[in-house]
Length: 261
Image 1 (spheres, rainbow, N blue to C red):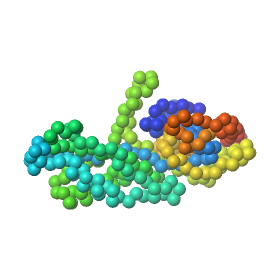
Image 2 (cartoon, helix red, strand yellow):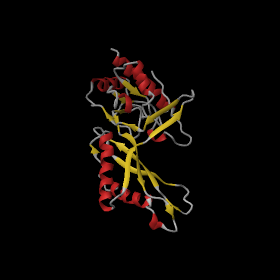
Image 3 (cartoon, helix red, strand yellow):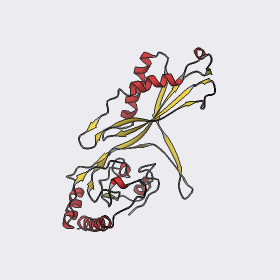
């Protein structure tokens, strides 16, 4: 059993330490699944786009280049990107989540820089090159309309301080993963649950988990199984039903018996 930190902001990053120390054959993620079995999830990437202009006094805007206007042109092209779609995991997503100009606040100054951040939900088969390549193509299309437009895109990096005081820094890219439902470990888990009298339909997570590392990066077969509703995660007055807790415990025990036979 492993417990990790900062899963919400760095899915799977601290899990890298687990696989550095141990080499599991199979991983069960104990996130909320309503005691069903999850065999995959979309990944997540934080994509940053920056446009560069020329600052000047806003009373003479012709003397400069407004980076925000150039960003508007880039965003228009980004919105033309048609996300890939997976038959199980669904649609990839690229959604604008924040935008800011610099200097900010702009006291009578035409902004010389504009930065936009996009939440990119990824699918299996999509890597950093695919993710950034789509945005770079959008920038190129915007540049055809505005010659001289200066823009770049990259994946964001983040840093958080652990409760121990140690800093955790990583690129905000966490890959998608999917395991075949015919995989022997999946079938053993289902057999164990059946013996425990638990009906466990197969589906996929709607949110990100440490499976991004275990299965997505390390290639370790992985499923999700745990108590409570996914919809109850991160809500006010979050709770877990006792019936779900006892049912999940019964299921875990039966899965482990099946796996160790």
